[in-house]
Amino acid sequence: MALYKVEGIVLRRRIMGESDRIVTIFARNYGKISAVAKGARKPKSRLGGRTEPFIYASYLLAEGRNLDIITQAELIDGLPAVREDLYLTAMATYFIELVDSFTELREAHDDIFDLLWAVLRLLEGGAEPDLIARIFEVRLMTLLGYRPQLERCARCNALVGSAWRFDVSIGGLLCRECRPSAAHLATVSADAVRLMRLLLITDIGQLVRAGIPENLLAEIERVMGAFIDYRSESRIKSREFLMQAREERKNKRAVTG
Ligand SMILES: [Zn+2]
Image (cartoon, rainbow, N blue to C red; front, side, top):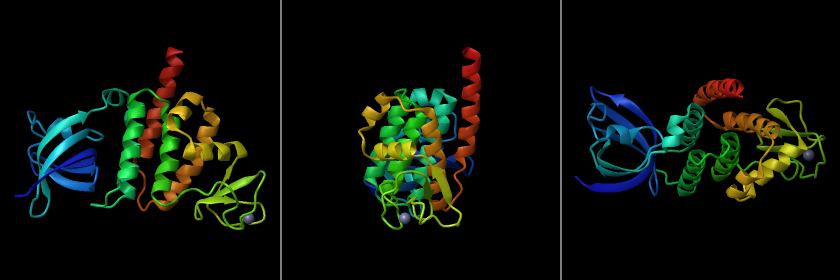
């Protein structure tokens, strides 16, 4: 059996048989890989804890007839702070679901890998999760070939001063003249558009230090959410978990003052 080693982030796992798991790993140089972790659900398994979602580990795989088999796993980073906090866990779950739903098996995407790992590390380091999420969304869509058109009207190329609408089917802004009566339109303020441009091009560390107003992030969340839903072939399930976790976080903050 041929062996090979990958470094990757676990996107998903599901039960197989009595004690095994099928694990989907997003690996550097390989892209998405599905592999079997034998006995991973047994209490004493060494593979168990290393095949949990958003674990970053190095895996030794053996080529199998159908599915490859994980023979060894060495933890690189388990993101303990993210795992301890419900909202951060929900956010990390959202990030890996987006990567999972927009990538194909065995298609290497090292740029997306680097972005995913960077945003997970920022969550771990205590950066504002909603800002990190918006940076991730605009940059992920760009790396997938859906860079939002935010400079000029996506249809007639006119410069537009105000009253922008974002057309998710075109993936860009439309001016007042080009705005059709069709659906898929989300209003977006000039400030939110300016911020989206910055999220695309500004150094992430600088954005994290800047302190971005919550209302603008919420506006961008609506626009990018609609855009992602339009482009995605499957429903993004983790968004519900994220909304619940956000409510809990708000309540907790209200209590602790
Ligand atoms: Zn136009």
